[in-house]
Image 1 (tube, one colour):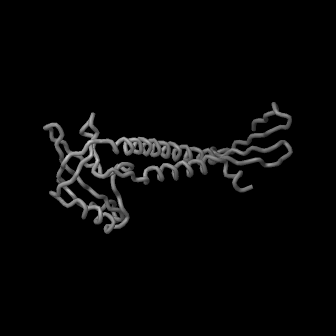
Image 2 (cartoon, one colour):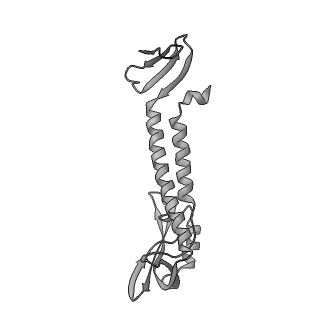
Image 3 (cartoon, one colour):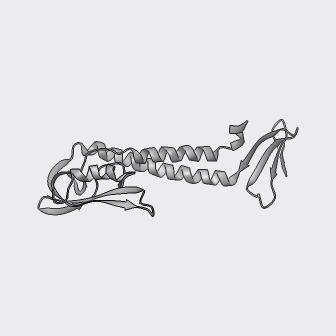
Length: 187
C-alpha cells in the first residue's frame, strides 16, 4: 500500500495481489472509494486508440487523394477482371475484385482501385457487390483517372468511401471507453 500525503488529504493506492495484479483501487484516507482501475482495460483501450488513429490517418490520406483526383487526367482503359469474391469461412462478406489496364504516354499500367477511402470494396450482401460488378463487366471499356505526375496512381471512380473513417472513429470511441476508469461511468 502506498500513501500519497503531498495533497491536503491522504490518498491510498491499493494494488491487489495476484492473480488480480492489474487491478488498482484509489481510496481516500477516510475510506471513501474514488475509483477502481483495471490496467487490462487500459491496454485494450490503448490498442483500440492506436487502431482508430491508423484508420483515421488512412481516411485522411484517401480524402486528400479524392480531392486531388478531381483535377487528374483521364485515359481510356479496359477491365481485365470483374468478379465478386466471398470472404471468410461463412462467406458473409463479399469483395468486389476489379482490375483494369490503361495506357499513358505509350506505357501500359494496371490498376485495381475502385474508389478512395477503402482499400477493398466489401459488401454485406452479394446483391450489393453484383450491382458494382454489373457496371464494369470483363473486357468493357472504362475511363480511368490517373495522377499526372504518377500515372500508376489511378482510380476507376472518383468517389470517396467513408467506411474507413467511420471504422476509425468507432475504434477511437471504444478505445476511450476502455481507457477511462469505468467507476467514473458507474458513479
